[in-house]
Image (cartoon, rainbow, N blue to C red):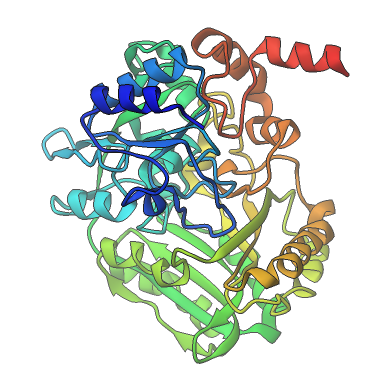
Length: 460
């Protein structure tokens, strides 16, 4: 744990509160939305600004403290909190300013998706930012940033114009296409490996009302739905994003649902989606015109904090008949009614037209992202839910590629990190050697500096 003199140094250097075990607010500040994670940091510094972040980095380096960085806290493996070390908590840093003339926004890293969307929509603007409003924009964006506008406008990282970064050696750097360009490339998909990103500037786009929602079908029709969806999605225009899978609908029971967002003309969206609403008689049809904040809030009730969460996820080689047959075996079979599995996101449009090496996030060529997203409420049910999730993923493994969208990966380790960063891993190691050679920022899907990997090889 952190010694009392170091805690006092933090408190004299940081303007925001510094919390330790037994103090009011400590347990709330260390608790993550995923109840699987129960770690007790030595201190939690709730930073009020960049100066606080800098102070934390300097003190942590001086005293060799393990460091975690927390924004929204939704890291599935719990990397937002560390055991015994220092949590640099930026959740209080909620500055956000929209420039409606340039159609840009600068947001600090305590801002959550719902807050971001409300501010930008006040000007009729938006950019890709995930689908659950309680998630922080920081981790989501640094990992890639899939969302309901990705077909038309690309991933969140494709809309990043610039960023401010506090590096491991205690510098503040501005990064963009014209300044510190190597680091600008690395933060767009390289997670938190290179520093604390304290603010991001995004390109915004005109987004008014959308046509969307969800259609719910009988779970027993899963194979028929998947085959139809495969053909329907193949013809999707950029304006249309779809995702769906097996889950329980409250007061209804097991369903196979497809959620959609069409960000073009409402009449065109309604016409385009007519076949999806008719090919199988739905249990419920909840498609309609709605504002963008409404559709971005649609998934919030399904992901309350405090549930136990374990996921397995990889991109698919292809949505073949064989893959569909395998998935159908697991539809409505999860031991928990809160689980989304098997579940698919369709990746299309602008997000897939970026070269794999143009940003640090490499997985642009795959049309389908598979996941088994298990959630339950009783800790006594953990073993059976984790086992079922692994069985579902294991059965699907012949149809999956090694690469994954890191924001959906609950497991850890170098093998998983290498697969997540794919063809860009070696270039990211070079960046790590330059900006964080001591692996100060290691609580992430970690890119190890060269000397760490060499030492591990020698030990083996």
